[in-house]
Image (cartoon, rainbow, N blue to C red; front, side, top):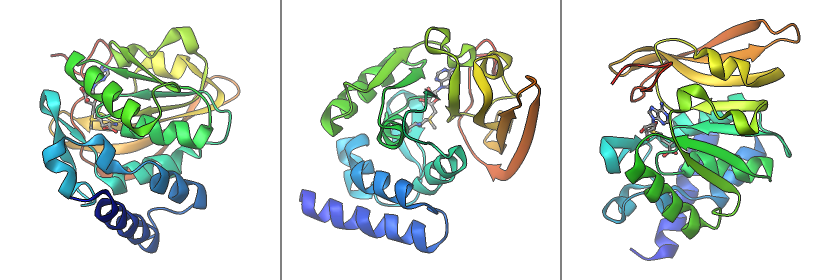
Length: 220
Ligand code: SAM
């Protein structure tokens, strides 16, 4: 497939998400156009990158569907200069989009070594390797060296809200995380840390993610 074709298909996907009211802000629309999904999928799936469905990536994992990534990024309300932690790097696409929105470095944690390599290669290709730092480890423990965070985005389903992630949020910061069952049904939580350290949870409906596996998530 010619690159031009991929760009046209991707443009139509972004415009469709906008018409559907899933992409709500111009900055998320611009980030989506600047960071096309086809740079983050396996070569054999490039022709499907514009389709609004998850796609397989190495390690038995998935790159999330464009609408899901847009919903989470709109909820996150990322602003320039924010300190963001992204958990569940996968292909690296969401981390690159976040870096495009905050215009600064983003830290992202992945537990599967094969995906760390996959994401780093994709980020290099897309021009984000210098700003998106892929860390191998258990993201349920957060990433203390760069805490506290304005935003923490989790792209895997947890049994409950991991305590270390709340601890690593700034007061006024928020965590976007799917919480629910192991087998692909969760509710999307927006966890806001209040000034006194307590949290307020807003629920944003049913979603389907792969499990968040780790010390403060599901056991392997
Ligand atoms: N955001 C990704 C993207 O843009 O391609 C898609 C993420 S995929 C749906 C979920 C990822 O979470 C998988 O790559 C999985 O290996 C990872 N994961 C699961 N548990 C994890 C943990 N405790 N720490 C870090 N990554 C984890």
